Amino acid sequence: MTNAYKQLADILVTRFEVEPEELRPDVTFEELELDSLFLVELGLVLEQDLGVKITEEDATPRSTVRSVADLIEARLPASA
Amino acid sequence: MTDLEVAVTGIGLVTPAGIGIEPTWQGVCAGVPTAATDPELAGLPVDISCRVPSFDPRALLGRRATMSYDRFTQLALVASGEAIADAGLDPSTWDGARVAVVVGNGVGGAATWETQYRRMLDGGPRTVSPLLIPMLIPNMVAGNVAIRFGATGPNLVTATACASGATAIGTARDLLRRNVCDIVLTGGVEAGVAPLMVTGFAQMGALSNRTDSPARASRPFDVDRDGFVMSEGSAMLVLERPGDARARGARIRAHLAGYGASADAHHMTAPDPSGNGVERAIRHALAEAGLGPDDITHVNAHGTSTPLNDRAEANVIARCLGGAPAVTSVKGVLGHSLGAAGAIEAALTVLTIEHGLIPPTANLERQDPEIAIDVVTAKARPQRVDAALSNSFGFGGHNTVLAFTAA
Image (cartoon, rainbow over all chains, first blue to last red; front, side, top):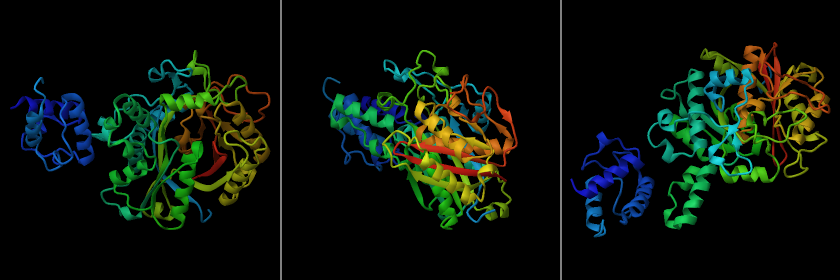
């Protein structure tokens, strides 16, 4: 489990009312009932909290949590 | 019975007296004011309000209710759920295309607007939530009731300021009578207790300044009244044509027998002291209901506790209704919930008719000597009520009067 995955999981649970037991690397945002409006909001939170820019094209309802976590990992500022 | 009459078969209430019909009815009849110092208004000149206690959106509405809906939508969804259950209806089996939704609202998602505007000022436009618009636009409450309960008939929100809830109910009655639906979910909602909104009302001099003793601040018809107390809440009613209600064996709580509406065309915010607009609305409601002025034995007044409203309203009641009706204003207990008030008071008028019990006007200690009507005070008055009016008036000069009769 990457650090980014843990950070994303934490944000999804604390800010987006996702239940911890629903979270798996291969679950999609659609399955978590997070539609495109919520994903734009998620992008804002990631930018604010982690300093990482995730666009609407990066995180779609069909994206898995792992795929977005991998993007975050790759884009995390060196200091983080 | 007139051919305009419709049956009230369900009620849902979410008010500062509690979540549900029973706590609200008990609280209003007990006459205990709900106004209190509001931590969210700390530091403002008027820092008191009436708030719905212990409202947990996630527990009541499920996941993401807090993220997806402003509080005004949340309150109406909970009230709608209770009203549907109270009517004995099951949304999983009803023909949704024949179910309409008409909700009155004054100010939309006020708190969301204020919070997001602050985010933009503090953090720039990129920090504004994409959920801002779907959360704040006033019509979204009707849209979300439709989504949650599968109601795909006509769907709209009415805005006549503090008469909005009553206007919605009258409009809903018309939809039923046009036969474009068989069931209407209708009422009003408001969640306008937010710093900018409260300050706006305070700046126009509409609010009570009795911030050192909030429980005594809302005092309709009292000689020392000095304005209203901002409140929140929702009431939703289920209306059906009486024949349909009887055919499915529904309990009819009361009938909505008449609806009168007019405009003062006098001043943006002050009531017309002549009361002519209110009088026309009352006479129209009576005519639709086939009632005479002496038949009305109870009036659930608009009674805001502002100096101007209460005197003007009392004068019209005294002039138009010859039967010396027992008048009450529940705003002494609940404060003024703007667009929800007309619907909450309509629901309470129905309960008054059903129970034969008129709730008291809280804080009425010394009646304004210029107000010559019979106001129920101190404690609830047991009295049979066969026909009653519920008055609602809004800034802009909107006057709405609903006439209810016993089932």
